[in-house]
Length: 72
Image 1 (cartoon, rainbow, N blue to C red):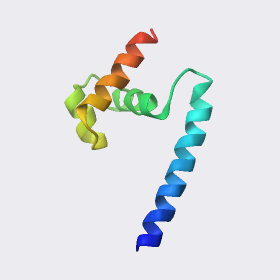
Image 2: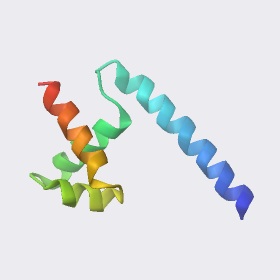
Image 3: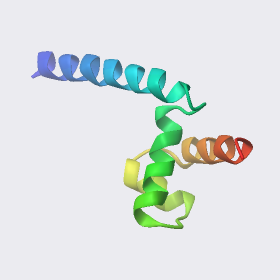
């Protein structure tokens, strides 16, 4: 099982790295794209709703939203 988890994280990190490279052309990152995707799918939302959906801490989402607002 431990080998599976290790391989999963290696694969996940390589996918996120590639996504960041692709999204970088638009001055975005995977974390910013996740917020955009959520709002596109579910509409106006609170930071708590977004952080609960992705199971991340609210400050992480807060930083992402702040960065998106700076991109306007």
